[in-house]
Length: 317
Ligand SMILES: Nc1nc2c(ncn2[C@@H]2O[C@H](COP(=O)(O)OP(=O)(O)OP(=O)(O)O)[C@@H](O)[C@H]2O)c(=O)[nH]1
Ligand SMILES: [Mg+2]
Image 1: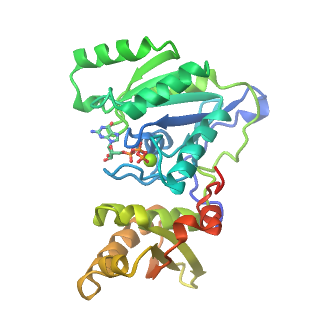
Image 2 (image 1 turned 180 degrees about the vertical axis):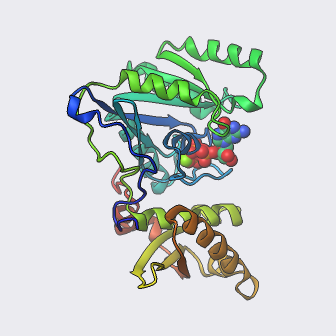
């Protein structure tokens, strides 16, 4: 049974190379415009779904570590929120978290959606990398959607910015090209001891991952500004004698009208969100889950320092 605060355990034992003292270990930041496919790639690299993924922009709100062992190397992957031109405090905090994820990393992978290579957000990130003389790896993503000759032209144009030392053409979704990227990252990690136990896949507590699973359904099942006005917190987690767990979560929204939408006609929407989230949780945690969702209005959550701390974000940026 998984331990409560040390979430998902690796399915396979990794090689016992630590005793030999020839290990490598380092941080790899995955950065890019919203929707570039950072979280999809993190999940593909780790081989397990940790980060939530939706077709909507700005799905990821704070940094998440995914840990994977490749031969003698432990890669600590940092999924970050998309980087974009910001307005709200929450946006600023998300983007600050993304840049901070890169500042501490040994390697940076910039993901570019090959269908949208001229995206202005991507342009701004490339400019900032070039201005700061940061070297990065370019991962041209979603190659399953774009013709090969077009990919070469895109890579060529981006490469001229002068801040990329390697380019990989990948599909985070199908896994195409991801093994090459993984092997390359492993080979350039600095020598050193592994920083996490070899069976650990993430730094995120299960309570937080469980809240993310529900937030993913909020993003998938609700539209317009609602997903961006909502946050989810796990309030309680009760282990049951039969091996199952009862999880109570609150979906916070900003206005009573939004609460009504989340509940839906005769509670149909919240029921559907709960059903899908519960199924996902059971798959992720490999056990029976009883999920209870509550919807509360907290008008000012988006300006409340305590909520930022709960989300793992800095308030004052
Ligand atoms: N066809 C295709 N779709 C992809 C690929 N990678 C990601 N996607 C899709 O792109 C959308 C966004 O993926 P995410 O992984 O959530 O993107 P992200 O960069 O983490 O987005 P934010 O967290 O919002 O910044 C989802 O619908 C994914 O299924 C890919 O290689 N090919
Ligand atoms: Mg993401």
